[in-house]
Image (cartoon, rainbow, N blue to C red; front, side, top):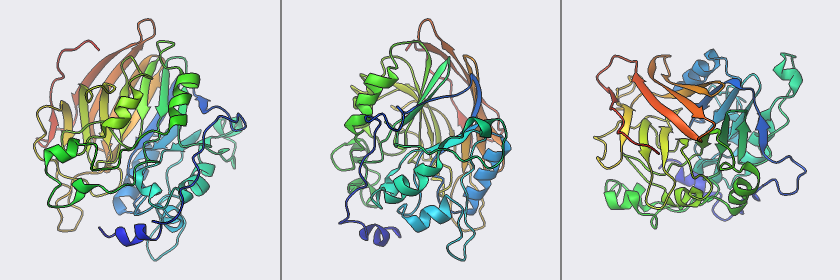
Length: 382
């Protein structure tokens, strides 16, 4: 609760105006990438911790074309914290941390913590530094700077895949009763949508999905990115965004999200009346990782990491890490790597352009540790 006094400074300020692409002056949010591409993704990374330093180094070692942050810069995402915990500018006696930019650019979503400062730092300081680099930068010319990411949602696409970033952070800062210590383990509150921020996706995003992205019009593989996820075997569900997305995505998708500070890989699942996806929670980028209790049986988690990380302090936390995605035409390989560079899981997928389906997951446990758990996915035909 150390961040509450920081939040209080912004309680009576207006949000930064929401941005979209309707004017046409800032593109349409669609960015073309190569059919062969490498992308590193991390969530809840903007902490300034030693662990965030390590995760950034591991991402750089992958030599990604693009890096994507799923949101949350702590504690409240104000300018000083963005400078020190994301942009690498020294503002205090602590060593700053710089987000690892991809060779061809980076993108960033908004989490609830950026919005505690009403989104001012996120829209004014982070987004101008994001986006795809000019072609000269892709060819290796020094000094080229990305032109900026205009809005808090975007789509990267090639001939085989669409990678779609969705904003669940803009409407995510109401009071969460389930975070009170006396209430946090009540299952009904974890799944209730009335005693927490609704994380509702802004209407311009939904209109853009329908009119511009048109994900149901062809058979390319679908990957969703957001800060909040629809379900969890260990913590909160956010069912309203899943219901909002049901009409926009009527075929299988892989959904990466953060917010919950752990690594958890789910089978095909979704809340009632909401989009069903293959969920991947990777909110373990920088914050102390929550050790997992036994997962709830009705939420099909098929892989999770429950190892204890010795960070030199007397706290029981898990390992931080991130995900690496390697695209090669219709094929996709995903690697889940911890902050020490150890590969925990990998999985392979293939996009079937004719049917619009995904072949997978072929999830394999690589790390030989009994606290890294894997289960066989159930038979299904989404």
